Image (cartoon, rainbow, N blue to C red; front, side, top):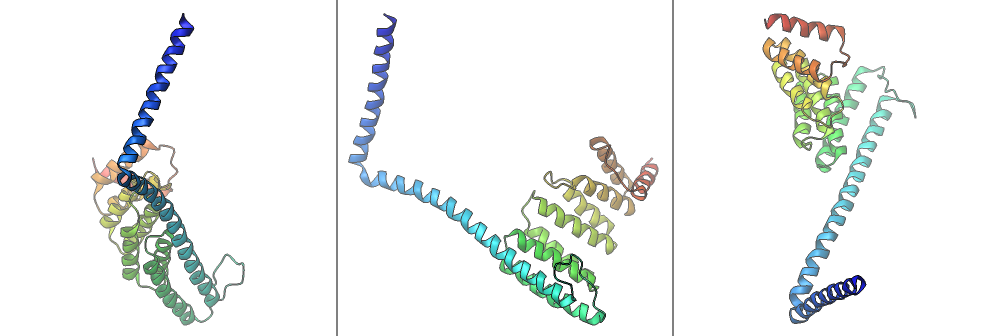
Length: 246
């Protein structure tokens, strides 16, 4: 009896499924335009996803190639030997300065023409580095800030750019601003150096005279990663801030 019951149930289920498909087929016959419109939307969405992925990869490849070309030309202009990891300083200082100034313009162009790619952000990072090397720290900070604004929120590349901007603000003597920037970098979970950014934030706030904020960040740092290795002078500066806060 159990077998007959199971067989009957299976038959009824199959009939119900067939009934559903019959109704669907009937609806398609009665409404062909709406059916094919729905299918078209689904296929278009799938194609758009694939096309977007392909286009993004193509854009990144083009940006990477453009950046590599500028970097290679800079190495040649500086007299670097093929395959060498180091870039020498030309015997003529003015030649080195001219090479940096010209390369900055090319890097900024890469950043503008390939906006939205990681390589474009790298180009801005390098442009700022060269601007700093030529003594134009103000321009370097502006370039790094523009790179940060263009970087995706929560990305590791944004964390790197924030750290570089923070270092630039430190060099400019803006300790409060540097502390804010390092703090933002420290909140990016995907950024591998986020805890070092946290230490930098505490150090900068201590340097700015904001002992309370420096200590709060330092206490959090020691609570979350007590094993983090900090240089002696950084730890000493933070200990001083702790003493000042009480």
